[in-house]
Image 1 (cartoon, one colour):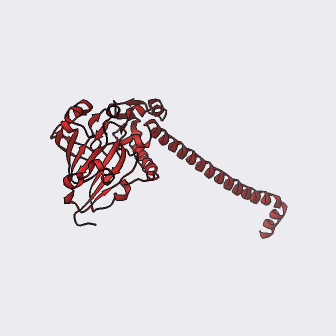
Image 2 (cartoon, rainbow, N blue to C red; image 1 turned 45 degrees about the horizontal axis):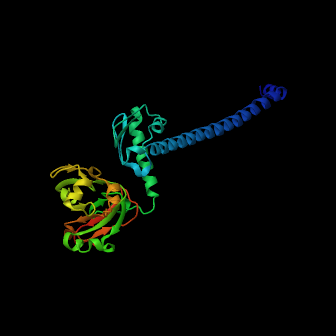
Image 3 (cartoon, one colour; image 1 turned 90 degrees about the vertical axis):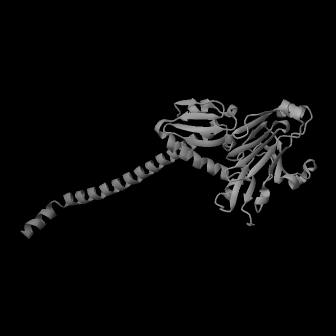
Length: 303
């Protein structure tokens, strides 16, 4: 029996060589296939990632840039965005990102993406965070997890923030009315610096008083004009008792006309009950938008 087996092997040895060589070749081919397949999958994932990043960048650009995006939300099928300036929105670019439609008026924009709206909103929010983290002078993230903070007061007017100590025209204001800042406007809009309530509208001085949900009382005065002048240039859009959300448009003022007439447009922002807090921190900076944290209020007794 064994002799016959050895005779068969000796006679057909070349078949065994072909068989094992075939197995070896098959193994080599499978290894090459797996490597190329893995490489192709990685390249596809990379292309998709680059495509998604390009899509997010296009959405941001279509909405007028990072600084123009004020609020971001979504529903089942739509990306809901509040922008600072609707004139900067490029609807054609937004459509190129796969949107089936663009709706909305003025600052409120709705971009229809269908069932992927929720995913796009999450990815866009993370993308915006990365972009904003790279901006010089950002202040919001400095206090994101600080439990000692009572309130963050966002800039109610776009422009240059200046310490009151540097302006002789407001000398004594802090001693009389509380700590605060001055803003040289570059845009004729006054927006709510936090969620709260309007407690006074002084049209004769272009002045609003607000209180936040946390009890911080703020006075904002537009320029330094008489009652007659204020009535001509400032248009109040809220009344006493109105509840407002951060970013809501509270008043409009004709900045160009005021400057042309020679009026000082420097506006005052004061925390009128600042004595209730341990420290009010100013964040003076040029060319700020409504997302800049202008003042930070800490708990009393906290350094």
